Amino acid sequence: MAYHLRPPGSPSDDPVRLGARAPRAHAVGIVVGLLQAATPLAFWWLDSATVYALGLVAIAFIYVGFAIADGRPKVIAVESTVTFAFVVVAAAAVTESPWLLVAGMAGHGLKDLWQHRSHFVANTRWWPPFCMVVDWVVAAIIVGEIAAGMHFG
Image 1 (spheres, rainbow, N blue to C red):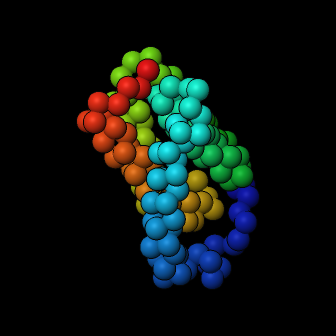
Image 2: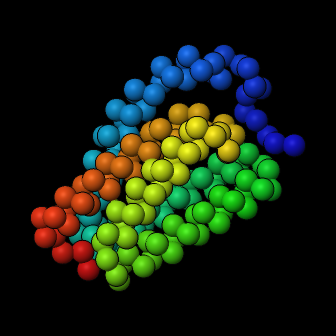
């Protein structure tokens, strides 16, 4: 049996109230995405590709935490497998092409969109639309950095 923080049908599960949170989640996602895109400045001694790869891995692992909170073995297995795929993409991006970082971030955003629509992992509520925006903002900024000729490795 899955562990749920709130019973289904509680006021927090009301689609109208959840929909009202989406614009705020998107706005905060843009700000956090901009901050995440600036993380190579905070870790100046590392290559930008390494910093972005660490960020991709960190956001992927958050869903493992949600899956553990959900408690269903199938959800834990699927989320762990998907997270491992993002770890492989991130590791390859460090030594290969920064386009793998774009693919990883954009792919994670698509995974967030799927999660938001399917509710595969219980009790994520506002997180998927927020994280989707963060991922896509970072992906767009990395595309800009690549286009500007920024060195990644």
